[in-house]
Image (tube, rainbow, N blue to C red):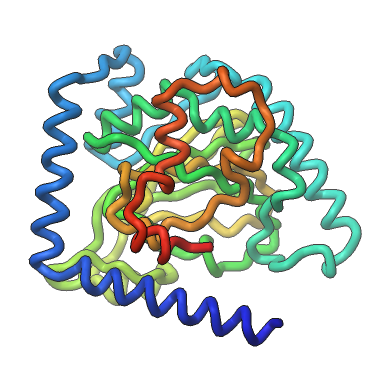
Length: 317
């Protein structure tokens, strides 16, 4: 069973990479860009107006790639219910950790699993808040695909690996993640960090993950301290960031454990749906009153259903 699963995953990976190679050809890219230009034109024909406060978020994303605020300032519908259930999930994770290492798949990347999330629909539904979708849509200039969320629990072990080294997210060429801290985070508590500028190796953006010293060596210059945005803040802090265009990391925590939720948003449909991981919980896994979602929210959540058959075949399972 284990060997069969590994073989299947390897074949699926080969198929995804083959599709990506084809989609990276000049002919395919021209066709894709023509398609997205038409989507942009359709959206501009019926623009969605933003409040001054929300437009400020979009402008900051366009200019520097990041914006930090607080839940209480955003005043988003459903925030209190989301936080209440999120704190319950954090308690579940800590109970799991207290039971011993055998209850943790990867001590360097601890996430809430499906069993801890499936009965807590308010977290997922918060990510579908129409204001959030409109903000992301105005930044991307395209309809939005909601990619679910990841609920991370970061140990204060100082370990520098995985998402704790500088990296770019590869789901699409431009994406937005919205992070919410569930505890106070100082400089020693594993804050989200981002480098303000796009980093190049020669004429092309450098796309491989790297620790700080290696990244400076590869791009051939020092990364000054004022180029790094360190997002410290109290519980309830919210961070908007384009994690596909700007290098970012969770700074290795040494002072205290950090709990944070990352909500994921892509263009709809994504240019690289085959790299958009299946969410831990999806809309069909949750129980809630159907009339709680608008058509706009459902289209954002169920974007996979409108993909062509070949794209569905290579979607991450």
